[in-house]
Image 1 (cartoon, rainbow, N blue to C red):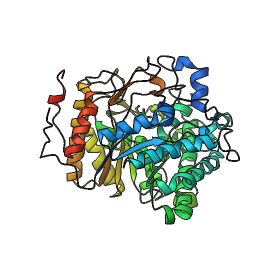
Image 2: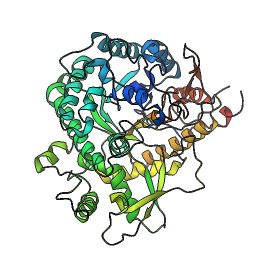
Image 3: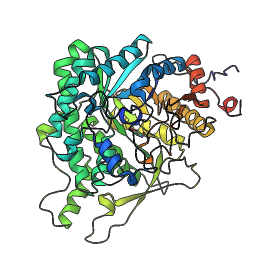
Image 4: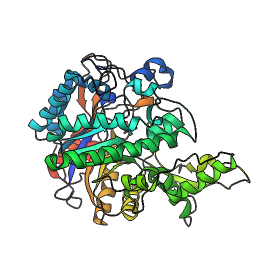
Length: 479
Ligand code: NOJ
């Protein structure tokens, strides 16, 4: 079958296209190579009922052993780069930097060397949600010392791998693990200290990110010449009433701005609306100080501007619905709005993920308007199903979302790269192996974890040859 490259939708010349994974989701080998226990090992082994199918990442895609096969597939599809993360407890088995695992470090050297030998650029996420369990016992991201522990880990990553890596991301989606793991109970460590621990977690994550950025700047940039940023998750919010521009803006600030404003805005610090509402709510509850911690002016300056690019994970959109405030009450989770969906939006196998392509273009334009023209790398975008090889819905999603992105680029958004999430079907956190994002299928019943191309992998292979969008109808029949 010949690919019908769509001449109307070319990718810009220097645009890079890749795919992604993260350590805990694919590696397996949870207790080999001297690896220590991490928070996700502990969580899935001790609270399996919090995972949809009671599963874990003990073996996952077995990529710790099968990385050469993975790289061969990435090469065959033709990706420019591969985004993956480093398992902290594989490098520091005791959790601390005074003891390192040679075997663990070697694994990432081997992976990076294999990628580079095939002309694939490694894009390294330093932290994608898995940290040594001992650090979790000490309070995890709510403990301010995590800033130093993370910096120790990042230093080793730069020292060892920096000479061969041009793209680094410090932390993946802090708002997700702070909100869902410390404030809520949908992800590890499930502390559920709502409207409290998530703010403390983010405060430390922002400081940790900034410290790693400055360290790279001062000690490594001149010799390594890489780019370093952070990966944020930002949805797009529509107004319930077309004329309501205020509520979607507030929703943007809580969702995206919570992490982005301190780093990417001109003034730095948390968004004003969060400061105002959380301060007020804390007062009403009788707190002696705000539940949203305060940065000193020095800290604001230290965090502001600490990114060479904006790493964007975007999947879906919501409708922001304003909630009226009753007297003397804490206002809808400190926010004053709740999120709704349009019943016309197709829903993926993951109930939180609706197909709303126009939201993607809108969020790219919104980020550009809000934070200026810094390069944006779309570090994740993708669709969940139950693992079918004929992944028609995923193809529709990719086509429609990529088209919106190209329109946004034409509108002046400085988008430099795009990453399909995910490369392989993998351990989808609380979804276990029930909701799958891969463009390559993995047989989790096979001890060899056989990999098979889905239609979407074939489509990407053709697209990467054309460097243009390809209509999906030829891929959606059963050939
Ligand atoms: C964002 C996370 O970074 C990734 O690990 C996860 O699998 C996807 N979202 C899909 O939920």
